[in-house]
Amino acid sequence: MSENPAEVPAPLPVKFRVENLRAGFGDNEVLHGIDMVVPDRGVTAIIGPSGCGKSTLIRCLNRMHELVPSAFVSGSVHLEDTDIYAGAVDPVLLRRRVGMVFQKPNPFPSMSIRENVLAGLKLTGSLDKSTADEIMERALNHAALWDEVKDRLDDRGTGLSGGQQQRLCIARSLAVSPDVLLMDEPCSALDPIATARIEDLIHQLKEHYTIVIVTHNMQQAARASDKTAFLLMGELVEMTETKTLFTSPSDRRTEDYITGKFG
Image 1 (cartoon, helix red, strand yellow):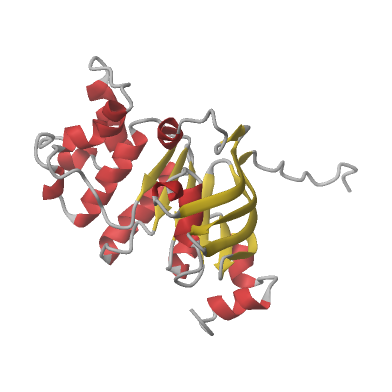
Image 2: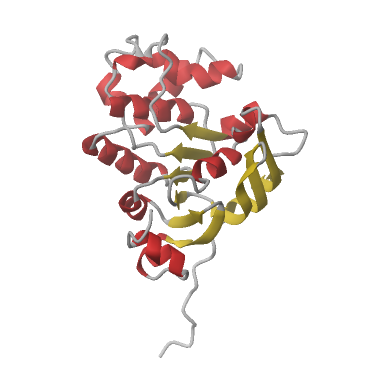
């Protein structure tokens, strides 16, 4: 019998550390003191019933929440060693590090496929024309879209199918070389075939990026994520390995939700 103890895998580095996060709109507090850690690389899913604060939470991770005039936020969110709500942090540059893909595909209607991919770089004044084509091709390849659009890069992005438009939006986020990709119900407007393409893409991207996905689809969370957080009425009930959460949750409320007793 070996005298060496079994090796315990080292914990993954932390990408986000959220402490006592409270956020809402006007007099309505939506998130009630969230504490959570999002590991680097891999996929973290956020699930919970409608109105539980999933989208508010994910938008606090790149300061999009504060764009609503009545919004408020307190507590701390650290992206690695950076307090993203510190006064010296430029929200525009933060959103370059922490990209966002929305529920409904939103390619810019007046722009070509090429222009859509490069829009983020142009917005931040960091577009180098000498490398633009290389960046565009790489982003479209990473979004599994290059082979489908390489012969029509000057066509409008809105001329693509719904699933292709969503992958174009992912390519637009990837073109600025983010650390993190936030996805707010990215498949809810797509058909099952397009959804499967996006899930395959998420599986490929997690080798290179930290991905946080909000989804109302528990089967999707089970298929696509490594860790899952369950929110209920603005509180984080539990967060653990996805397989553990779906097979042996530690909180009765989680079990009731995933077995369909409420939703």
